Length: 136
Image (cartoon, rainbow, N blue to C red; front, top):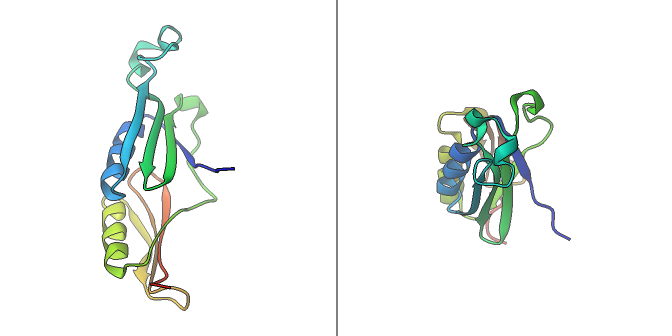
């Protein structure tokens, strides 16, 4: 069994996934718009450029994303996406890059369980934890 996060956006999926691809050194392998799908005829013309389905692969992990109609969109809450590394310098880079244009909720710092740990909300409203437990 695999569990993959599916992040829902209100028209910003393409920009978010391009941002995550850069920050996480990932690769977008799928980016389908409503206009390029069999749903094109059922989609308002102004929404056809929105993303029906996106897939970002980071190492052996997968993140899905899509845009939903404004009346179906709810801002995310009650979870964090966590990215981990054993390299403190990589943790610093990840935190800096992901928080660009966003909000730092807990600065990246040493904790009793981690060499570096911090929490941020990115410019797209997605909450992230960066965790660096150190080499085992």
